[in-house]
Image (cartoon, rainbow, N blue to C red; front, side, top):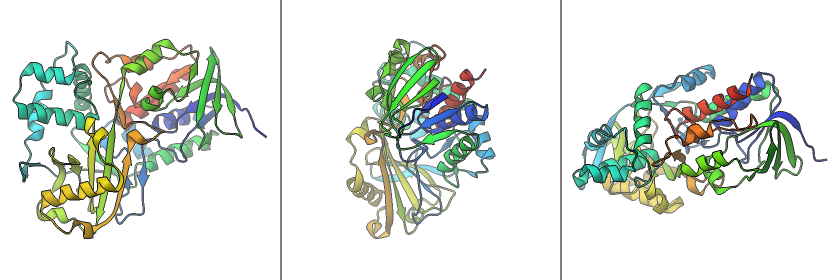
Length: 420
């Protein structure tokens, strides 16, 4: 028979934000139900195994960016292992592979971002009248790193992000040896151990609320609705943009903030080879940038000895990028040209790819703040009648949009707002 649970808190979305909030609330003694539309937890953490490399392949979040204390503490608590990524940054330009001046020029441009007025990055580049090749490199970096359109992303947000990254050594990056999904698994284990309930393959279809009371309708025939005193909405920004879960009555300030923010598109592909063939030309390769080719950005797992290369396409280019086997063929062609190889097809063992904007449960990779939207995340982080709470990387107030530690911080913040 269908049931209608009555709990203290219902949480929508079992990404890191939802998981962190769920665990904290359950361990504080509240009754909590966590709903997840996917058949797995983790959200935009998406780890796959079973390839020819001992290091798991990440199809979503991959790096620990810098040294964010909350995330590092959780990784340590979960007993997971980090290694720092190292190696050279190389560029392929004008038919040649060599040292990369790309970042020096791009970062010099970012160093002169104005505190005000807020403008789009494209407007800023036009105002500065930079040499065309410098402007294009800076544009390529901003669009690739932020999955953003330079004609939309705001300079005020970019400046806030730069300062936030400097505070946590954001020029360093790390990976979890066991796979990022082990962090999500740890959180769900702690949540369940504290008495929490999780329902996978269960989409919320509508939210009706009044102060102190929430009714969430679902597509689960065994549990068509859940009643709670409060709800945390930890759904990706793309899903909120699509209106996939109507909220009645609509909270006007929150909806206005959601509309101000943008969801960036990204597609990625990891190619696993029999050997690390690139070491002949680039023995210490970390990142490779080839703006003339597709994908335009690549990285290895160095210093880990995984025989895998990951290609990344983000921002406006991702909307025009091929997918599936067509992307695989294009990626192999790019690598064959860069490294002057004719045998890559025979060296390829497997490939793994994910188009995040085509994923119905994310509808994009991660968020960014357009011109005029610097305060939108702060507005979303304000509880509504002590009943509705928003979480997710798009609600982070510290300038770390698009990161796992932003999602983690937002989930902990939402839980703290609920607890006395």
